[in-house]
Length: 435
Ligand code: USQ
Image (cartoon, rainbow, N blue to C red; front, side):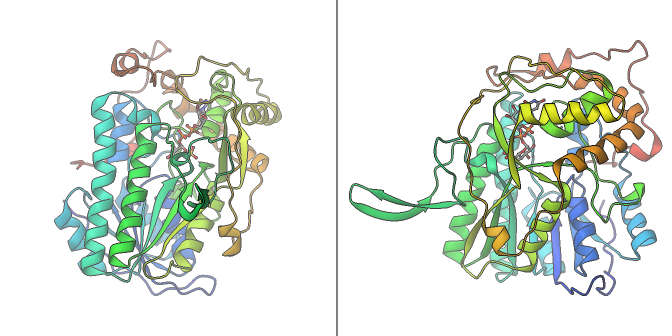
């Protein structure tokens, strides 16, 4: 069933009047805060989602630490607290007719495409999860590209990619392209991709498809090479009714978010293996700022623009130590343990990606890592009961070296005799009739 399409209220906010933005994956960790941020900037926002992230997180026995109400209640909260409306179409990008219909009805100026399976460990569970990830992600992107070409050819596609497409080469990582001099000839070529999971490879293939479509059809496209995002709050998320999801289990939680949840739970903080693997990180609020900048300063017709989006690179050891130090301020004394690395990845390597383009477009870092970590601790202490109920899904089970981790996942049992609640609180019930 499709939620009624609402008419957006006239733009207001801090002076910026934006065009209509369609966010695919609006119910997700990034999609929801982006919707709130763009509304505050005066954009009209319409979303698409099939609620499959909620379903997949339940599949691995977890839930968001923050309670996430059904989407209609999220829309109602936006109306009550911000006086704004978010249009919404429930459906799956795997259905090309659905994609066409949404673009025909909405005719957005920008499409921010976030509706993809976003977990590396989930894609590594077994062959079915690998196929589900790659087929689903590529199908959705191709359907969007074809429908854009046909219906809104001058719209701008902001596509969520990942820094993980590049891997960890022993040279600097440019923003998408590099100049090469080979056997006496020169060219500007896409920088080699060396992804580290089936999920990350799906983003590589997506990037190729978006680059090709922008070339043959003169589409405008920005491919955002997103680093690891951390945090719960943005300026628009002051009221708990507007919270975004916060995953902490092994499959859906990302490293720093997980480390803080582990500290709150009294579990060891888990930098995998040696812990010197480095990644680029960015606070949720600044990630929203970057995406908004990409929306408001679109790529030119036929341009395939690549933005590396992160603020600073940290090793997971550095993040673990910082987490343990800030935990002390909250009376917590977590230990740091190094479980055998479930992933196949370099654990000590050169890492120097360039990230200049967003700054050129006006991006400025506004959040310091340590401050955000404190805010997360404060929030997670309030949601401790929900963390406790799922503490058995925190430690790693999915092994990159195995072709089938389903049994390891299924073997995880609740550690408390009471186990997790069998009936979630009313505000966390899944959306009905999931696509
Ligand atoms: N790691 C640990 N301990 C943990 C969890 C992770 O040491 O408990 C390590 C991993 O081995 C890896 C690093 O932390 O070396 C990053 O892992 P992550 O789970 O924080 O992030 P990742 O799996 O790479 O994926 C996340 C998002 C994905 C996004 C990506 C950006 O789930 O959607 O594309 O970050 S990036 O990492 O730059 O590719």
